[in-house]
Length: 291
Image 1 (cartoon, rainbow, N blue to C red):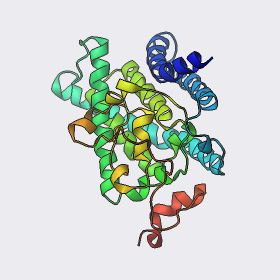
Image 2 (tube, helix red, strand yellow):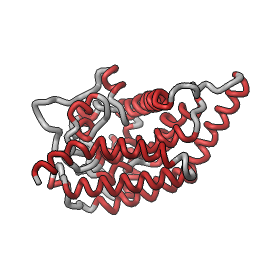
Image 3 (cartoon, helix red, strand yellow):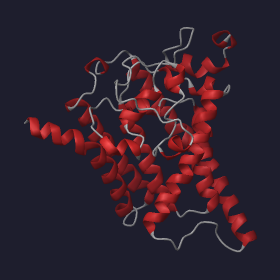
Image 4 (tube, one colour):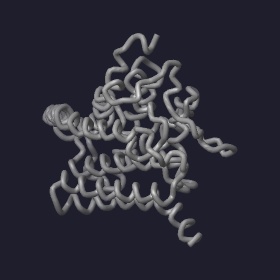
């Protein structure tokens, strides 16, 4: 059985991420896109939970610390936020794209390119927006919002969605917004969204996934764990969402081979940070917490 675990550690990450990308490409052509995205996301989530159960990275991260209830609150809030505010936001970007298309005599997106090249370009555009906004979050007062994501004291797939609603909406605007303005079609947009969602869950998963050379292409769990360090100089590295491309370009990739990512994760804040859902939503607006 040791060979089976050896194989599982090396195939789980590319299998789940690659399988999700292939599945959404196929299913989005055969059923409503929203349904296809839901099917792929649920299947990927179940696979990641199974990987965390059978291939734990740190056993000390397995037990709940009362954080599951908080993360479930964020899961519900994320759905409500995207429905009530995210939907009108994406509709506004789409309308702006149509206006630009009517003024410019055509779409700005290269629809005639081969599908794989379009997907790569879309990921790079998405990544540039994500990297830029993420870097601002770690170097400006936006940290007050973004610190909520770093408030976790252990890493597991579910806490990937721990984000303040304002942080979430700004992230949507800076990642999905440029793609919609450029006029990508809805199937390509769905593919990028699913890849980003699944990789976000994977990079937070408490699963021992051996990714090797993929660490130079994707933001894998081995890369992202450094970003959740309590040390500020490590938190400000590995800022990409899916690809490490912009981290390499701007010199912010961190993956020292001589040591493992830190076991202790969190905000590194000098004051006790709220650990409950409501307290965290209010935290960015409490001056005493940041003085």
